[in-house]
Image 1 (cartoon, rainbow, N blue to C red):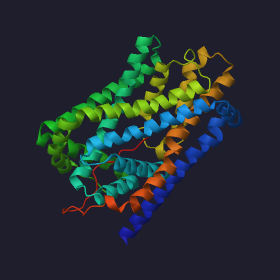
Image 2: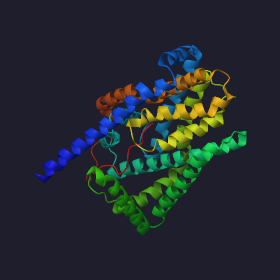
Image 3: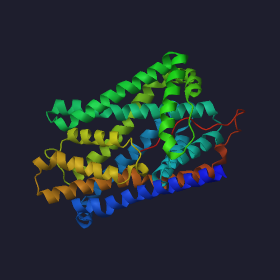
Image 4: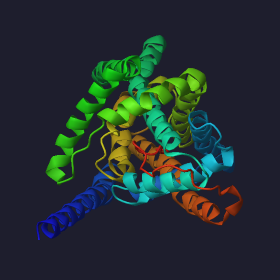
Length: 370
């Protein structure tokens, strides 16, 4: 009886989470963004782009998608480029379409890896390392952006706070990660502490406590071995993937008419870094709605004092660029993932016997292209 009540409570909590997420998305797209710019005007701004501009945006978007795959290969020895593409695109589609789909994306990613003959240790290691590296890059982006703004003379006080937050969080994250690699006892202690903290966050949602002490200690040795061999490509491809995403936003703004004088590339990088930082908080699926509103608001504030056109036109240009950017980097991922999932189902030549070990889920979220 108690287990039935608990299951029912979990279902209602899940339904409430989905309802709140959908309500936020609808409110932003139906009421929030139209208050900033009329969708008809936004569409006209998009249609004014030339075929060459559209082709360049598609090419850069394709490059951005491709950059995630070498990072996965660097963290998973033996993984081919095609397998990385199938795994990344399929899990990304699920994460972008299902409310709270990160866990389901992880399960699909795990099933793919297992079908290709990878062990639980290898799967846990790649998900852990790529998650850590992607988080490090996101946290360091505001620092890089502030340096770029200082060099170009466009630094503003508005970026000091997110930069300070980024530096503090980066130092804490690097310190904890270094401590886990330093000693096994330290890894067990840090993993246990993080597990307790995660359990506190899960308790209001009536989810069971997690125990990460032994998990952290178990993966410490393999992590040291992998990082010592692959830290250079991991770091390079992690930064390349994030800057590839930034390049799509930069081109979208330029192609709809926002000039360098209005918003410099360094300012765009700063706002990009700030929104990427706050997107770490999973409120809606893939940050849908909140990310768009964040970019539009931040970029408008950054460029309104230098606008060469009336502010209403400038707002429309910014909104058009952001919606084009999100369509190419978020919406476009969905049909691609559907195709790659079918490829996984039908590509029997990739299948290998299941490794002889106890099956257990990966320890971290799958690396997603967001």
